[in-house]
Amino acid sequence: MWRAALLGLAGCATVPVGNAATVFTPSGLESEPIHEGVSYVGPFAEWTLYDVRAQMRNEDLIAVSSDGAEVRATASLVAFHLEPAQLPALERQVGPDYYEVLIRPTVQAAVRRVIARYRALDLKSNNVAQIEAEVAALVAEGLKPYPIAIDRVDLRTVAPASEALTQKIQSTAVWEQRVLVMPQEEALARGRGDALRAAAGAVRGEHLKVAPTLTAATLRERRDAAWGALLASPNTGVEVEGAPMSSLVEVQP
Image (tube, rainbow, N blue to C red; front, top):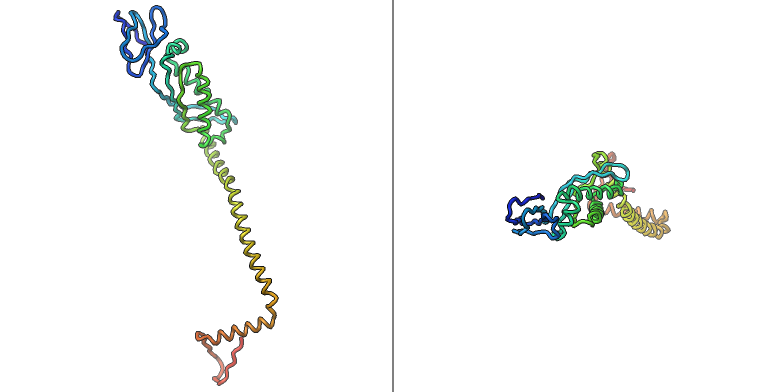
């Protein structure tokens, strides 16, 4: 924005593309702005140019959390535009330095107020969208009396300025994730335990059915049958050491 004074008597003003201008005549501030192109403003008039296109500013903002930790919002983006028809009101209220005088302080105050609601340990990446929404609402409320529309406020990074505290927050976030997973792991372990108990109960039931039939005589009979099957197998060989050969060999289990 800049102010230009008409030095001749032609009485014309040229407004660049994407701009509008308020006009001062010897009678005072005109109630209607002039728009891009050449406009007649009268002799000895002055005009102030305003960029009415969408504009953006980057800010590095500092705030303090509810527990006293210094928090930095880096590479924050403020997008806004002016209402062309209401430029004379903006000229009367603030003037061409409206960003420095009005928007920046309002955004800074909103960020400080919102961050002050959170503990440093609660400032995680998944909270940024909520913080942005709260900041944008406060900024819009603060600028409501002025012809300035805030399109958005983007907080790219919200984190404690202390690196040690940032690492502590990251570690806390990891443990919080583990705590959230624990109920699921507990449910899975309980399900596996129930399945193992059911299987063990089935095996125990089978053992209880078989146990009464396993008498000493039955076990001896099964042992002898097993030895007989082993000796009758074609893959079984018998070697006798330390005794003379005889026609009779007795094999015992």
